[in-house]
Image 1 (cartoon, rainbow, N blue to C red):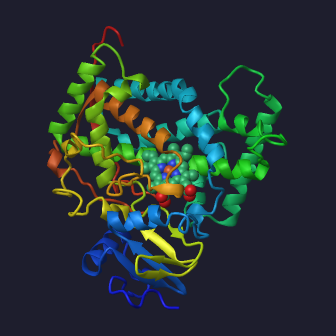
Image 2 (cartoon, rainbow, N blue to C red):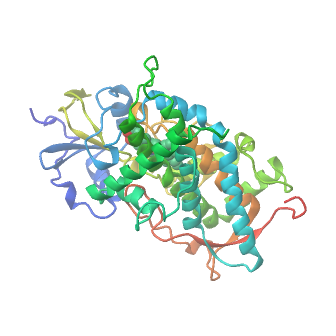
Image 3 (cartoon, rainbow, N blue to C red):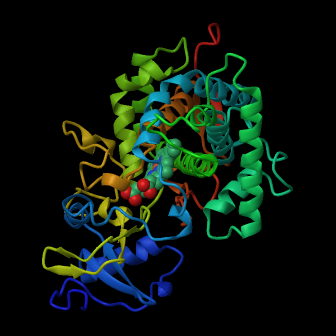
Length: 432
Ligand code: HEM
């Protein structure tokens, strides 16, 4: 059977490999010409590219069961965080609150020292280290530095393993490292009264017959990779884009700081318990994730069986790419889609949880991001703290409008150039 030869909406473009370094933008342009559901061919595998909220809903909601699988590619080859892990993922969000605040405090202290001589700071690197440290403490129980794995360093090896560039040797050394960590956890047996990390919790399930969470050592290693890979760079990328947009839009920055002054006050730092009251900040984060999705093409889906999507025949094992970047700039769904304008969320309930298909930075449905709550908590907390404690200036008298916003497409989509800025402390000095 041929894919939907009856349908004009699907067009064959030849090889995906012809796309440039920004496939989300190339596919966006193609979709403007050929429509919201397109067919490309990569070798023998049919690829369906979805580029409108309505089309995304068809694949991720109406026919979600059929498209609930992933093709066997690097980013998705690992163990899937199942509903059980997801459950304890949610349950554990609060238990790591103190750890997150401690790590963020260290960064604030470092930045405060920099304010004395008005030195510029590489915020991208600082935030990336912060979120990597938070992830390590949450999953593995302690921070691992770059000397802990091999000469390449822990973070580089993690990232390479997540990217296609990982060689079997790199993966092997990471797995040996994870084995060592698991052994250390078994030996220490959580004797001290520390908060249990994820490895402790997972070890608790090994060999327990009656438990619904039946897992083995290999599952634990795969989940460790999933959780570290899922959380290390995603939150950092979202944070650097949000701060970039605030620097580029001083009006919005002022509004965020004003809200923080009212809700938190100038005598103390932000706490996680403040976050739900910061409604303007919430709109700013939504708007930043809309324009700068961490995963612009989400993660590819694969159809489990033949399926009719409206009048289109999609055969089993087709790959489906959802161009979230294009969807979140769809002029039929958004007024002035290229404009950073958080107020667009005033008086409506559009949220990022996968229910509103025009805003899907975390994907949607069965394969939507299981780390959504955790990711959002970290993004909101770090952005709030950075702009509550400091005023920020661009270096070399650069104007906000001159800040470069070029994207670097990869497994995630960070800034092409690191964000460099100069902090000035703004809280009352007596109490802090
Ligand atoms: C800012 C933070 C984050 C963003 C923007 C983000 C975004 C995403 C997106 C777009 C997907 C693909 C969803 C789809 O294809 O429908 C995804 C999947 C995933 N995320 Fe996240 N994520 C974030 C944080 C996290 C965290 C903190 C974790 C782990 C604790 C995590 C673990 C995962 C995993 C395991 C998957 C694969 C799910 C599957 O294949 O079923 N993510 N994430």
